[in-house]
Image (tube, rainbow, N blue to C red):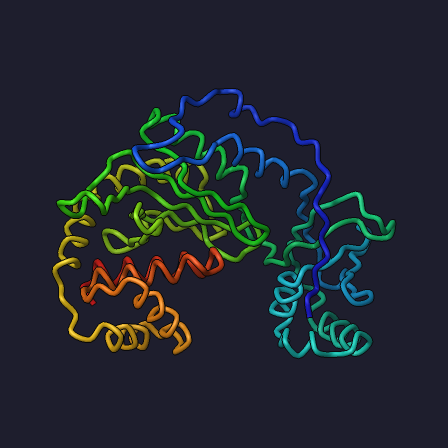
Length: 356
């Protein structure tokens, strides 16, 4: 059951001060067309107006009908599927069961469990709109602990602007996806590395940013390797971990901003290590690649269905080396939802660096 009805918000955002500082950016590297920062800014700003966070006790919440929740003294909101699942998690009741219940039973169940937890406070992340239903104020995007500290898309945009300005055209946006549940921005340095003598296997290196406004991901930076020929990439935990990983609690934003900038320097410092690992993987022959793929999938606790998807990707360009297997992983990842894709690209990078 999909508990989400969300028309596009009608917004007239103001322009943040940092955007008045123009960037001098290249539109492409040698063979990679870069995304426009202005288009990224437009997307972030277009979804930023109307957002509001409410701190309320659980006792202020009442389900009303199929998709609507009332918040005492605040009005009614359409509740997203994610927010409903998070609310059930706060109350420690199974969301799948609740979603299968008839409306009357579900509302009664929620009322009972809210009464048992009525002193607990939560943060409601909302967005208002001009709804065709006068009784509905907007969308309830997320139900989170009241201690949740956001790192929102606008902040990610500001810091992306800052780092692009710092590197003065030698860093560009290869990909940017701004979604309701997660945001991903992939930045590449302009150093082009050839992985074979025929110069048909070029790679660029950089940093991948991922975050979520609704509690689905921590704010994370990882080193990224982008392969031009396959238009795919691997993400790497270098020096034993992410370049940066910040949960949404106890945030020192001044320190986090400094660590954000430093992460790009660390990524550059580790580029040679990644290149060496990739070259080693090219020479590591695998006797039975399909069996090896199934073995790796079991080792990393993935599903049999996932293994078969990777094998199909491998068969489209069968190279019997560890590098060939990793390429199959990243090709399979291209067809996935962005969050699943990023997790798969991290797995690919782990295989490269750990020598699995």
